[in-house]
Image (cartoon, rainbow, N blue to C red; front, side):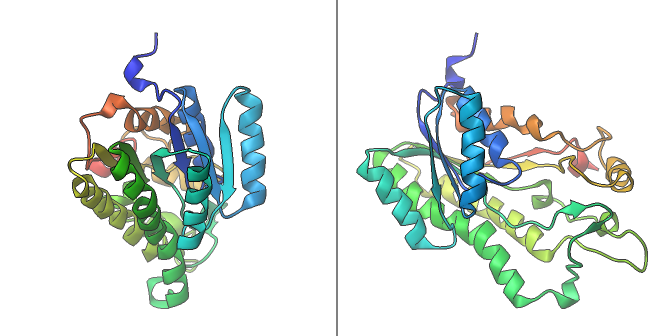
Length: 272
């Protein structure tokens, strides 16, 4: 029997960047413990398709979805006001939106060398991954504080506590590729945001934590997967479904005495 502390009891959870890699998994995790969903993403086509797929799996689920750019205050407030008009209040916010250079085949799509990293790219990525999380927390968190309840969960990374091992991304000495500097700055910044918010509303019962997943096995080359497995005590990358239980824990009353914490689930990589 499911522990009652894990049940969300129809609370509304808003997920940013819901059409991204882990957004679907986060959404399913919330529905599996009786929550309601508000899915947001800048890509309305992918978002609509995702919402339809989830609805087909969870027939009785209450799922709303909105196109929303987390870098624009007016976009966030527009969604907030639509929900408020319908007397829908966000009690759980998952800041998941991000821009990431994915490993595809043998290389990262872009070189991302620090020496040539452009200011435009720096500002664009930070505006989504870090500023967007601040703005959403500011708008939805402020509303939570007035209602004196709520949970904010920031999705960080194992690279919030360690530096990227750049040797992983180069297929040869001549063909060098890098994890961009923005990724480390954003993920470390999210931990700072988590700690700040966890103490900002001390008398309102708002909890803020972060989840730092390790690398997820997708369509990477065998060579890449073998290289990264050597850095991980469990000797493999994560399956994307392996973070669902953590989402359930962190978003529910099962973690009612936990705030300001960064939960690292990386197969042990960060302890080596």
